Length: 234
Length: 227
Image 1: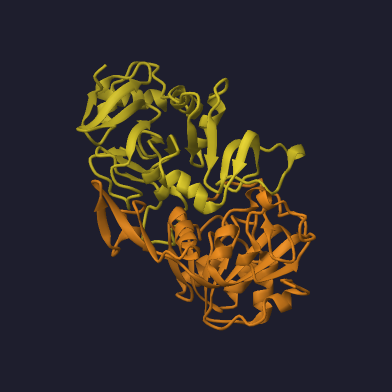
Image 2 (image 1 turned 45 degrees about the horizontal axis):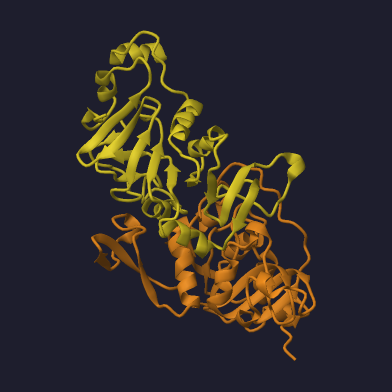
């Protein structure tokens, strides 16, 4: 019997090695697997490369506390800096945290490409800008494009709304964001799910991520992300 | 202050630049029913207030196609945020996609219009809006570079000059570029200006403003757009 459910976050995080590349879903707090990141802090892996859209705000959330441990060597990110990204700013300025800044759509496509077995692709995004410097340029139909390489990870941390024992997943509203593509792009995909449902309860046409992409599922019914009615950031 | 500036630039007495809602309303006049539009955060977002009576589909790069307005406190749905991470509503008929599909929509040319703010726009369509320095502090880029090259057309909405009065429409950008040759039209508090094959072409001006006064506040040659 296929059963990807595990009983605890500690069990879900077992075996993550030092030096791993770890992707995490979320657009700000929505669809962000904060409990698994807390689990990564507990688990203790170091010399990590993180891949995600944001680098966290304030000093309390797990992503920020993980950065503050000094166990993250590098972050690949589109919007690291926003109001309140104090820990990222400090770590980056003092040279303790390397940043690879990537346009958001290029970041998403580099992840998607990895999951689809495509090592690199051309995009017009960032051509002629500081973020395109040093990249191979090729012209197609009179337009210039940059070669961008895919990003594969050792581990993907995903937040889902519903999951069954096969690891089939759904996401809630804009909680989907980077989660489905990250689930496809890692050796080990770990999911925190708000609801565990019976196999068969999710209609085949409504499954967003088929379970073949998923390795472990842990039930974390924490409720809703914090309301975001605050000043715009990214 | 307006009067002083008006005298200094030789405009008619009582000339008033367009206010931000007027700029947004002027831009919204040019959006036909049926377009799929991405609005950047800040002034561009005001445009959505002025398309009433037309079905225009607003896209948010975090995967929303058919975004509505900001949520009222009693409507709170914390699982819905826009690109600025504000809680928003969906309109009837809306759909949700993941991030790679959302940017495929952008990169694949399925967005009719993107509206962004800018620090500088050049006469060849280059523009700068993501950072004022690559060395001072850590920049963030988000989706601006993808939107700039992917949308079918890119319109900029911004003040005509910076706070100290220096032109923001220039021969060439001095700040780090967001994209090359990407801008097709600029809506400022003074005028509507197309980026034509030979540079800036004035489409419309705030009432009472002279071409000379507009030129004096612009860092590249202007000509009137042929009717």
